[in-house]
Image (cartoon, rainbow, N blue to C red):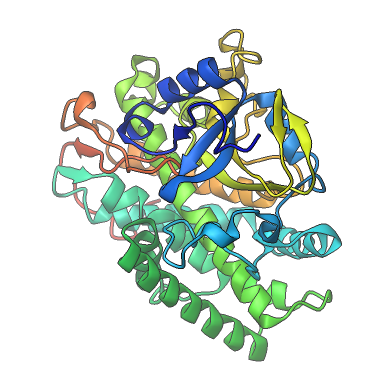
Length: 411
């Protein structure tokens, strides 16, 4: 049975996925089980995997459940203007769609380049850019902490680590944020990012420096400059938006949940707890496309045909009642969530560490510099971006006592 012919496939869109995804996942699981038939834009069929064990099985078997999108049986039905093509492309040269030994070599190049990032320099960069952003808003007494802080910080830090100058950073911020918004701006943003990365790689090929791009070019596995450009684009895009949403979602939790009130008055112990809870309950990357079955198989009681696409329901798996019998997952720093993926194609561990440092440092600077920060509107009026893939706030209006800018004088 294909997902399209299964009884009552679920349309994978709509306001509920934006406003209350937890309810949607519960209803889908109740009606269809851990592997559910869904319809993407244009009634394109796929399977949504919501079961924790099933997701573990998929991500742990890259041969049966491949990242090779050429396997997809639906390509003949996909129009050139299908809105999800930027996410589910064919014959893409990036690491996202490389499989087998070549993928492992490519991932190794990435890990080596990221592992060499000095943790003290990383935190210093994150604190510096966070302070600069807060300097721009602290005298006003109010701000949208998403648009004026969270959506700007990660890419500025990552751009510095990868080899861009601070002067090039603002245009990269615009490009990456455009890629998240409407189709026309997304294409322009992607074009700017490609051009910028191409110029950076060409420059570092001639004059290497102590940065991620140079270390990737120095790898001896024989990757082309085009492959390195593509991987740097993936790393920057994948590192920016989820980290921005991690900051925003964590601040939202701390501003709306009384359990974290102490952190808003000088305490830092609860920041890590809030960030961990977000990864379990409100993870920035909700769903990922995808995996493709290389042969007929069974999964979660469903007959999966060769060429079927499976969507990784990361948030659905995190909230699977089969593994969440109580609230223990949220305590003690339990990191058994799927927010960074699992298996060969998971987010590399050094990238996870970099994202955590950027997010935590950013939140600490907000709470240090704006100690009486509070919501400017009722929590019920806040809205999320209309996406089933990435979950983040459209805005987070806050108020605080106006203070002078530091101007680089933090001791």
